[in-house]
Length: 164
Image (cartoon, rainbow, N blue to C red; front, side):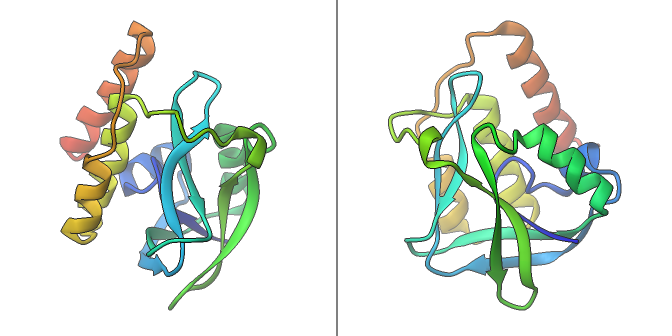
């Protein structure tokens, strides 16, 4: 099935780590959508969410097995802050994605520093426009107060920077 990633799953190595059958088909733009770091996570930080209003969101389109999609549902917290959604990606058609549940949207949240870097590395790896990547880089962030989670997040960032 086709899956449109827009946040921490953008980077092909990151997604393959979570869904071994993931195969990058390409990237696209969701016109009229906007990217936010406003979805309240169980760790109290802001994770990515998209809303159907704005100047456009760049996405990576992947093909993955149904088994891996179900696995990703668990990892992403389907039903616990994210709802299953579908978006039309020009050139790719209908793609599954995750949409933040209204009850979990809080515009006052900020992402952890390592999380924002995961998203930014995905943008750069996929060659998204510089203005789009800069808009992600400019998002205010906070330092993760949990040392183990922070170390794990930064380890993932380092792995992606080093190409695996």
